[in-house]
Image (cartoon, rainbow, N blue to C red):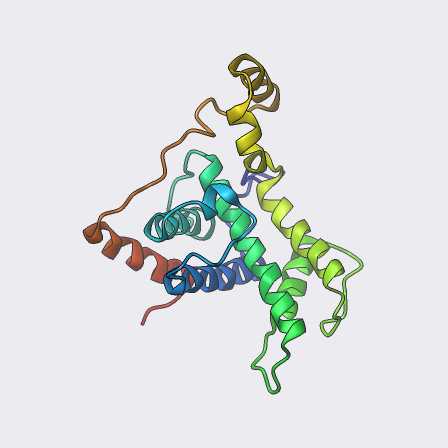
Length: 208
């Protein structure tokens, strides 16, 4: 739901640093993935075209990292994109474990995760050199849950295909907006992409 219990929306400190790094990495993946090979376990996001993905990433980056912007209306696509950012964290931790690099400049992905977990108050943390991917997955999931609260965006196909009366009752019970699953994704023109790239550079800290 993008709201913490104390009403905060903007990520700060180590959580913001982790999200920003993962967002920048995901943007690079989308930009360089001409054949659509990268999948992030988030079908509403994965099924978009590259420019659509970048436009959505600019939206969530702005919403979660910039205090001067209003809260967007939540949709399955936006929340799936947030899920894709945290899946990127998990993937990068896995790559870091499977393909260790000597003399890697700190902080490592695992160190970024630990710093965010400490700020979130998560206990029983791992050593930064731990190679237990299952345990790292748990920590990343905890950080994602603190932002998303629930996994309504993973129910996309089941509720769309369900009987309208039944799906309507479920959405009402769960407090899901009627248009949550059917919102139309952005489809930016080449001219609009210039502004989207400018936004992405701002929210990821890439001023090049």
